Length: 302
Picture 1: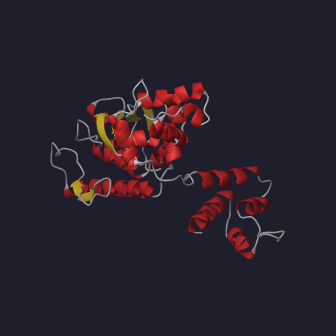
Picture 2: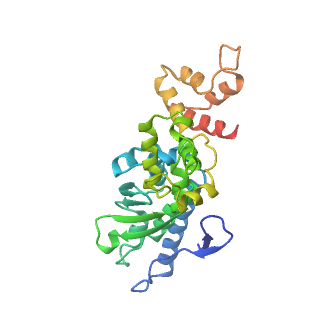
Picture 3: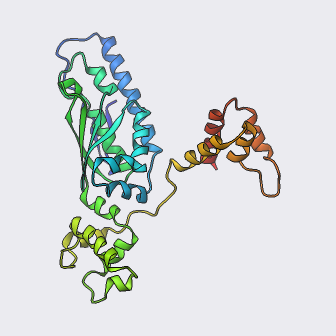
């Protein structure tokens, strides 16, 4: 395994933290088997993270959650949970803060690999994976620490993610919030100039005050200036789960395999049936699930 790229693509590298030394010797074959499995799991996580970028508008909904229930229901976390489930990490949200999340994992492959010989916290790989996902796919750098571990006698493995405040403040604001932040300190009536009711303006000002960007008197604070200097997050793009969701809905609503083919890959304009390429796609499929997988792959390549 050795070195892995540091978060943020800053051109530096550091060693992944490995579990403590074994309390008793293991055979060379046992050690190699564990290291190979860890390498496979690490590669699986890296692959999942590389293809899972989430648009800022969806991250914003998650960041605005004030307790675990709405955070869990946010599409961004639902997708994050799906990604981690694919590599054997059943992720849940235990607590949320303006600049933090606490995640739990009831059981991990990483803990099981070291359960016999390592009493104590052993899931540094999971901490690293959470940190990499938050930065690479949510655009929110984070330091993640394992607080509890099944191998230390705890019921679940628990991870505290401390989010970068500047990134959170920049992402949590929508276009109207940015307009208000820019206008603070001017003589303009911002509510009127932005065509906002007084109630909506006051609600948005509460957000700016809550995130430390403005004072209760309506003056922009130092952190507000820093956010303005950083600027808004990148423009939105299609969420990675939307295409698959639309395809699944089309297939679920189809009355037949043939109809599903048409719904998944519609005919070209002016043609009553699917084109030759679509027909070829369907010809090699034995199920709706296979059709979904092939159509998803084709859309990603176009």
